[in-house]
Amino acid sequence: MTAFLEVSNLTRQFGGLTAVRDLSFTVTQQEILGIIGPNGAGKTTAVNLMSGVIRPTAGTVMFAGQVITGQSPHRLVRSGLVRTFQSTTVFTDRTVYENALRGAFLSVYPGALHTFFGTARARRMRRETEQRIDELLEWLGLTDVAHLTAGNLPYGYQKTLGLVIALASRPRLIMLDEPVAGLSAEEADQVRETILRVRDSGITVVVIDHNMRFIKGLCDRVLVIHQGHELAIGKPLDVLANPAVIEAYLGRGHAAAHR
Ligand SMILES: Nc1ncnc2c1ncn2[C@@H]1O[C@H](COP(=O)(O)OP(=O)(O)OP(=O)(O)O)[C@@H](O)[C@H]1O
Ligand SMILES: [Mg+2]
Image (cartoon, rainbow, N blue to C red; front, side, top):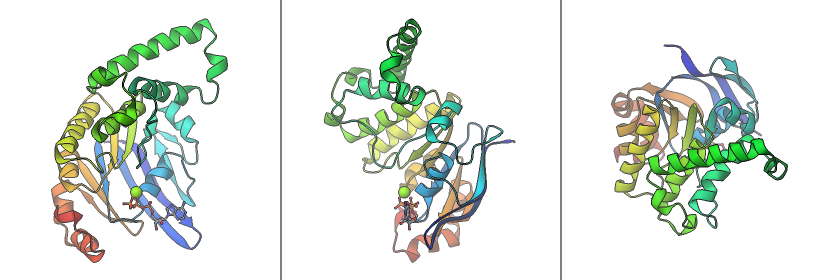
């Protein structure tokens, strides 16, 4: 199968520290690729490099046949690549609906909202966007809480709202940084089901998490990063049974591999 996302020899140094070192892997269309590894392994840095948040020291990233290395996050969102952050990106003092609308508009018209809203074309696009948001909220089960302040909702809903914000820009690939961190087992199961539905709708997913039950139940393949470099890649059960992977976790006093 051809690669939808292709990472080649990706490297990022921070001063003397090499956070990501010569990392190469591919993701095929509609695949769910998990990225795991001990704290500080370089997972978030890898996603930051692929989503344009920071530039690589070396290496290239290709998405849908185009070289995208070093492009800004806004440009990548317009190409269909969007990511969520490890901490929630929800505006806690705004409603669920307002948060979702922001996801749709800020990605398309960064910084130009005031001039944009005046025109007839803008009003039509706003109507279309509002319809899209209504559908998304319905799809992910947030319709009943759409007009509640986001910060007052249980954390599971806020994480789902983070997904809605990402999906509002009509991505073809989403990268999720720890979408179930801090959630109960039941909430994590719900988020897993939601992500599976997102994939079934045609979207490719790259997901970082420390929750191995979640990763096992969700991912087609798992990439293990250790000290910035690929330690293993393959089917979840194979990777989690790999002695080098268990060693990497235990070596850091990390019990996640056995959860
Ligand atoms: N902007 C930065 N400046 C300097 N060092 C950084 C920066 N961002 C990350 N690092 C360092 O790079 C290494 C990898 O960090 P990263 O956040 O990618 O790890 P991670 O695998 O996401 O860990 P966690 O599971 O704890 O989220 C760490 O040693 C971290 O301190
Ligand atoms: Mg991280």
